[in-house]
Length: 180
Image 1 (cartoon, rainbow, N blue to C red):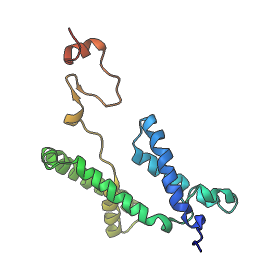
Image 2 (cartoon, rainbow, N blue to C red; image 1 turned 135 degrees about the vertical axis):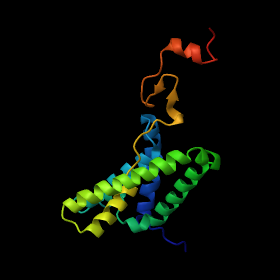
Image 3 (cartoon, one colour; image 1 turned 180 degrees about the horizontal axis):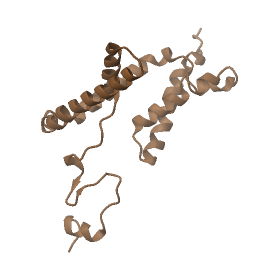
Image 4 (spheres, rainbow, N blue to C red; image 1 turned 90 degrees about the vertical axis):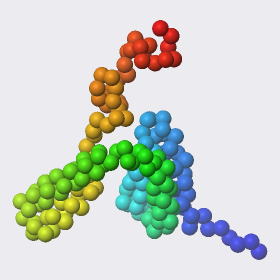
């Protein structure tokens, strides 16, 4: 006799796999990083998102993650893959070239943010030791401010990546693919 298959026990894993198949093409078409798409989908479909309406709308069982512990292994594997991809992108030579920016500006950002948040917490009446720990913890989770690094420099100076491209006449001057 063949063992019976209880598909309900795999519903959370199926939601994760189905979401991955749907989200990646949508966010790529929108020009957004797939990682941000995964985070937004996880927040929306997780137990604290649409999963919190499960009792009032039972049909959401098949479209939300009911118990996060069921997909913890997939989540941990996703973190390993993310770190692997970062490792592939970051060579030792690139890290060495960016050392002043990473160590200098990154360290300065952590110190300044720690002091500012600890000061605000102290003014709010939090004990000084707890305020320092809070400031240091929050500073490590803050994204770095945008900087004008060598990857976005142009002849005209620094412009954000989202800025409009240069005019076609300047393309002819700078690009060898256009005949003069």
